[in-house]
Image (tube, rainbow, N blue to C red; front, side, top):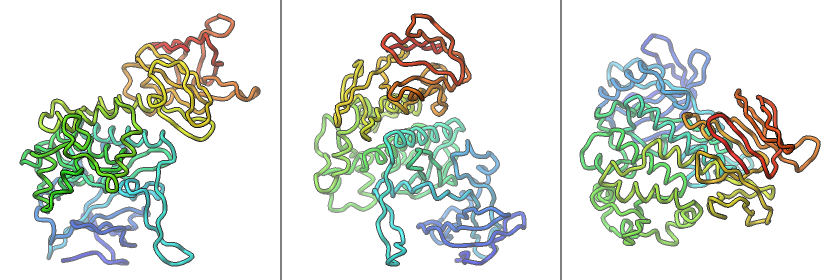
Length: 447
């Protein structure tokens, strides 16, 4: 088998050459290299011809994806193909290299990564955690959006794994990898991946499609949020013959969600599944209900699964319910009060925060310095979950006095403390007071 070596030049199908700098990582089916190509530092994914039985199908799919182009800039999409080795048929493709600021999905799940300790020369554990609840929820929204973008193009993941996502734990930005396994719905790449990421119908022989990908998305989100597997409980681990074939039964024909409200035979066990036991308690019921529905009724009935759009709306709500206190702690207000409460109290330091009611939803948003109002929250027709329309800011002259700044391009109408309604244009702000009323245009809000 032909494999690129450090220092070697690999020819592209167009005749130009890329220099191999180092090995980034090795997998069962491929090796990823760091290369220099046309002044760019890129990654080269090279296939192991002894482990991949369908190279021609994969080659065809990569060429199709290069022609179609990436759905957006969140994807480490194939850009160029290498020249195919004449003796072995081996080949690879070039893609953008992951920036150092992005962490591996599996390292976030584990809570650490292994790094070289410069003082000892040995490997040491370094913590890998989201720096805030906000960045974690943003990561979820970005992953959901990636699935939606693929679905809109009539494609689906066929090789989903822990290596499919890189995440910036400070911002929640996401980069999608394994884009060579994204294929048109109904197209079979015949990729042998772990059962844990496949929908039950795919495990039982159906081809991947949008329905199966909504299920795979739920698996990814569950593992990210709860640091565990939705079907690995007592029933699963007590199976003494847990090979891949037997394991697939626990994710298809014999699947029992670990928190199925009607079947407690597969509950997580203390000492083994401590993470999922801990984190399951930290999320509001409406988030847990979405997973319960997908992993109970949705196992055998794809129509019962939470859709991409529904997942996005749920986590837009969760993001708006984050309360970041001055004491340094953050909470979901659904976990410290009722959705209709006008005032929320930090359970750590006791500071109270007022909240605002919007006319297009039945839950309130806590107001704190640094909070944000997004475009999708004040325009029912907007799908834009990234653009910020308003910011909660502190008065520059009177410390502790909070206001809202319009950072959108639209005009708002606001009832001021003197009872007069005034237009608030971009860059302008207004104080928060008990009788505050805001007309964003299509949505109104009040204290």
